[in-house]
Every structure is written in C-alpha cells, then in structure tokens.
Image (tube, rainbow, N blue to C red; front, side, top):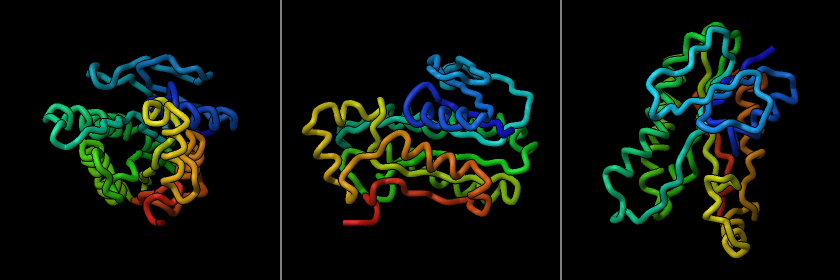
Length: 227
C-alpha cells in the first residue's frame, strides 16, 4: 500500500488529490495549517512558515506533493522587496525544507516520487505576474536540479497549471463575466478544475510514470502552446 505525504491538503488541488488516493485505499498523510475535510490516515496541523520543526514521520513515504502557493498579482512598480521575499519563502524555501526533511523517508520506497507546482506564467509572459513567475521559475529550476541529483532513485516532476478554480484564484473569477473572460483566454475555452491537476499529479506519483523525471508538465488548457 502506497503512502503519500501532501503538504497543504485542506482545500483545492491537495484536497482533490487526497480524495482520489483515499478512494484507492492508499495511505495519505497531510500537513496543513487548517484541518482538512477528509479522512486522512494521519493529519498534522502545522504552519510550515512559522514553525521550525516539521512533524516527525518514521514510516516509508512513497510520494511527496507540495501544494502551498500564492497568486500575488500586482503591477511591477507596486511590488516591494517583501512581496518577492514572501512569495519565495512560501513557494520555494518551504518546499525545499520539506523535501530535505523527508528525503530519507522517500529513500525507503521502491518508486519514490516528488511533485511540485509551477504556473503557466513562467513559460508564457503575463502582465502583473512578476513575483509569482520569479518564485515558480525557481521551482522549475529546482525540479530539474533535484531530478538530476536524485536519479535514478527518486523521480521529481512539476506541473505548471493555468488558472484553476480553487480558493486561491477565487477573486479572479468571482463574477460570471470574469469567469467567462478567463475561460475564453484558453484554447479549450474553460479554466482548469482542481481535479484536472489532481489527476495529473496522481499520474506522476504512480508506476505509470516510472520513466518520467525532470519534466515540467503543462496542464493549462493549451494556454502555453496554442493561439
């Protein structure tokens, strides 16, 4: 039976992924600031930014998924140094902290996998996205560096979504007009769902992707490659 550690599984993509894995009778461990609405095998209420020591897990871990992220959209002239630092701390440094701490647990697995998240805005330049693009661009670099360093034992991949219907993006699609405008920007004429990204994540965690590592998977409704 596989065991997956999901950091940030109280809502959105992390919650959808957890529900998928739980339906398959897999063991899911959650670390989150908020109590998730899901029957996790193990749950740790923990703030990875304000608390130094991560929860100790003694058992094998087959997959790590780091879900916390930010959408800090402002004109470049309005962004302060602290905006960039806060985004980098949440999106990059906290992910590094979790991977370093639980890497020994992964090494006990026969097919260990790490899945991180970027954004379509790294590959496709978008106005007002400079802060999130900086930190998520670092995640893409980290993905490739770790995939090289951890091969052949641990696979490391990254998913780069476009706009997805989660609480994080709620203010961007909180009217029918905003939702329609966002949908029409995508070749497939809809924005993503949490389950779209969860399904792709589940694939990258599974044996079905055992020959895939160091990849940035664009799950973005065609946004990054089609006009």
